[in-house]
Image (cartoon, rainbow, N blue to C red; front, side):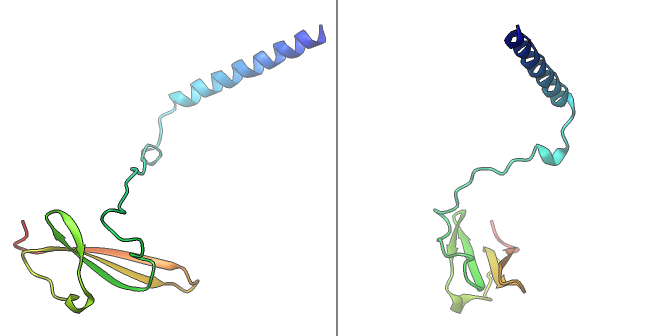
Length: 109
């Protein structure tokens, strides 16, 4: 008899849990709860050391793909091209920080 009562109590708790789940699913979600980070793999476009050391890294976009430019060419942007600029620095705590910029030339197509 006691085992049967325990089973009934467990079933009641399961039903209550299901009811709570149903009630929660009816609540509208906040807009930021529905956002998902897309599973993107950038390893074919950027090498593994990009952003791992302090400094400036610049990529020129050619045929819709980024190509890293040599440091000697930094600061020379052409109005027919587009660029991605990554600034990697170390903050007060010793952690890496990143700032990403883009530049779209006036005559870029």
